[in-house]
Image (tube, rainbow, N blue to C red):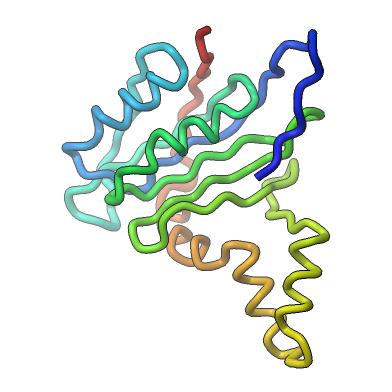
Length: 177
């Protein structure tokens, strides 16, 4: 992942994004809120709901705004908890590309660059690498590109996204310091 450096003298620009915890054991709910609070510098209380797809699990979704790279910090903070399914997105700015960090217990974490519409973006080097990897086996190219796009994470998270559609709560996150 590469972020464009903010020029000297320019303050960090505000970005917006979405933080979705698709499934979290009830016992980890306060820990997720504490991790989020640690990254943004203030107490956070999410609107937790039962996860209808997994008994005993909770879910929460919140729109946020804050400095560039907040999403990466939040994702890194949650990385150690293997029982979580979550996504955190950050919209692109003039100073940084947009990104989506997705985590599932079975696949781990994945960063995917995204555009303003939320579409996954492959770089020129990623496309060239996929073409080289396919070699003469042109039928292999779609699977390699799907892997580059993070399709395995999308397949695992899509049922959770569909179950949560329309439940977003708006919440402004501001990192202190």
